[in-house]
Amino acid sequence: MTLPTLSRRSLHQAYRDGSLTPRRLMADIAARCDALNDHNIWIYRLSAAELEPYLQTLDGHSPDSLPLFGLPFAIKDNIDLAGVPTTAACDAFSYTPSQSATVVQALIAAGAIPVGKSNLDQFATGLVGTRSPWGACKNSVDPDMISGGSSSGSAVAVAKGLACFSLGTDTAGSGRVPACFNNLVGLKPSIGLLSATGMVPACRSLDCMTVFALNVDDAHAVLSVAEGEDASDAYSRANPFGNRSRHYGRHAGKLRLGVMPAEQLAFFGHAGYEQAYQQSLAAITEDDEIELIEVDMSAFLDAAKLLYEGPWVAERYLACSPLIEEQPEALLPVTRTIISGGAAPSARDAFSFQYRLKALRKLAQAALDSVDALLTPTAPRPYSIAELDADPIALNSNTGYYTNYMNLFDLCGLALPTAFTDDGFPFGLTLVAEAFGDRKLLSIGNRLQQRFALPLGAEKRAFEALSENASTAAERVDVVVCGAHLDGQPLNWQLRERGATLQLCTQSAPDYQLYALPGGPPLRPAMVLAESGQGQAIEVEVWSMPLAELGSFVAGIPAPLGIGKVRLADGRLCPGFICEQSGIHGATDISHFGGWRAYLCSL
Image (cartoon, rainbow, N blue to C red; front, side, top):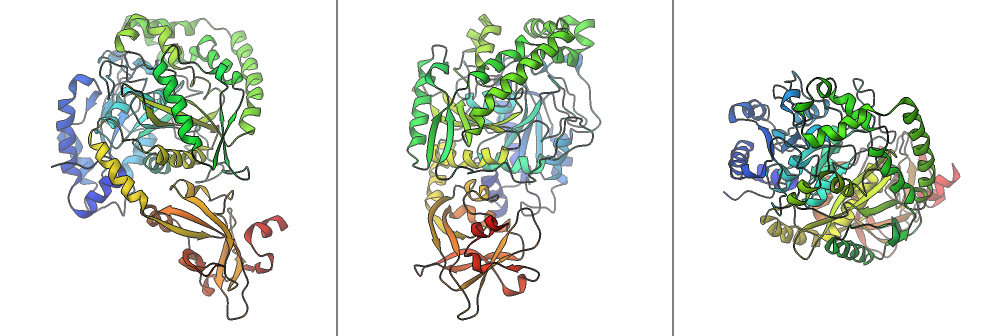
């Protein structure tokens, strides 16, 4: 049987039409894993007997009742899965937890199936994927090259078609660099958005659990299930924007993305990555609605140096204690060398570097305030495994050139595949925003991923899926919006993340009344067909959306709103937001303002 690409949409379609079941899928994945043993992807794989209880819980369910129904996922082996050893790639550290990490529990409850525990740089110390007693995890595209770390196995598992998505962790870039090197999306959420309960810390004050996926939609689906404040995690934070994000489209007109000046870029002699970067920017500027703005990122680069030159390595030492003191030989030499440095910093050092970090963060604010998001290379260059073995510390440091500052500055990031070098190696860019701008980045990221339209992961059949996706994307539908989904309004991201583009700012035919519904946030209007002669023209926008996305968009519309036919000023009838007269009880008639924006200005 030829399996579909392991994206959420493809798998759920196969489950719905009966061409696939979760049991058949997991049996096929087991065979694939056996064929890829030499890639050193796994530390522990669940047996058929261990998988059966998870499969049994799905009986009687479907993709319509569980959002992650039947989706296989990999778990980085510094995150707990009940009854399975957690090693952090150090056998002497190993323990077997009685319950799963908070995030893992949420994913399983939503229908996801754990495949196993994936390989990593020992104690999540590294950006390369070579620092493991279980062997260097080989790149999914070129096995002679590094996979990126420390979340190496998690990334390669998704890229090689062994999982729909995976969990990683990120302190210095471990949720982004492997995404870049394996042609994946890597979501590094805001610190505390995903609970760290059940995760072995590297730097506890900076760590994030992360998501690898084939596409932005899948990363968003996982985030929506996994996020939430957790009382058992002292660093957990509630998203103040609920299931929304920081404002997207706050600048009138074009989407503004901040890029580095040429003198701040570094590719460490890799012409292929430098060329791929320029090609990626050129492709983005073909979109007339996106503007690239040069911004000074020197403060970000200065902060990046603090992560390993400063006292934060002391947190790694704490995380490995008392093992590093009582059994130092249990750690790999390179890991021991790095973490042992954490015994030296003093309290004076800690405060001195905190002062320096605070000053740099203030300088960085100007760049963040000037654009909708920052856009940088994810990594400066790839290295071969042989190159890393010859110079493990310096080359690892180079790899974090664009990533080390992010958690120190309390930012969120989204790594996206955007190009291949001439020799076929993946390259990608990272979008950066302030904390809780996660969905803003996902919205922008979806828009960019559709523009680049690359194959998914490392599988050959991804190219076939690309043609399928392009065909589907070509079918679009116009949708009329009049309120919270207007450009720049709080729910506009729901359109943009589905690849919708603004086609027209206009008015409705003079046949409608506009009401402000009670409740919120967000505040919402209702447009109602008026009785003959009592209506007026209302400000609206027409957005073009891929037809395949319309169903999920409509499913998220809360009562009393729905989708009906809206007549525009030019006489056309288009699908759009509409409300029956019976749904406006307690609402305020605001028709005289002529539109939602004018009403908001009056508040």
